Length: 338
Image: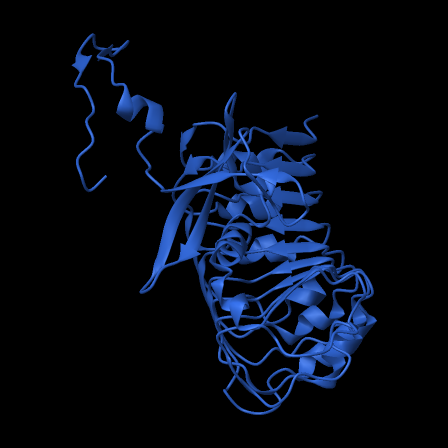
């Protein structure tokens, strides 16, 4: 009996075979970082023992089969970085009582966030970023004490009015919370005083590009700083660039790693451009000249992401013979726009 099927980070193409739904003993299905296309087969909803479903970083489209959300055994669902559409089921939190991770970042999902997620008491990781969710955030996170990651940036959440951030008060019970991204939405009103009482483990908080007003709550950050903020802080452009890179790659998460070589690692991500989002490839070099946010030596190159193979094959093209039909492939060349 097959319990785990993991063939991540390969160059397989095509669609997900519907026959996978016949693997009745499967508990772990990982098909991330492929070039898979098409829709998610309805047959995957037959995997009654499935606990981990990882289909991120593909080109999957259509809607997620409702039967997937009926698998009560599911612990982790990761469908990030695809082209999935539609809404989340209203009763999602009741259908998946064991849910610990829901990562649907960077898709085309719309509608409201299900209030039923308040019932997901084991929830530790929730990433709804870069979608089209709208309305308020109705979840009571007080029932999710294990929550350490909450990211909702780049949506249409909020009404630009007071009370949009009322849900933040329920995060006071999340003592393990490390990351909270709420930026690029329509949240209005004042920052709630509960911001000052969030987890002492909180490392990353961003609420930029909203419609917030008022004052910063007393005690936020729990520092003892005094005096004026120096004008020279506006010159910290390198810090801003580092922040953009960290955000684009989820702090250089392995989920965003697309290459590893003798001269460094390469990550894929997105960075906010002046008018739109830009796909980039970030290469971390081993030759270092500065430090990162952890104090480690750090240097990186940021390229616009190209789907057509490695930079090396474009700079140093060699004629290749197709092994199947014997035809010679033409040399590649770069133009000034590339």
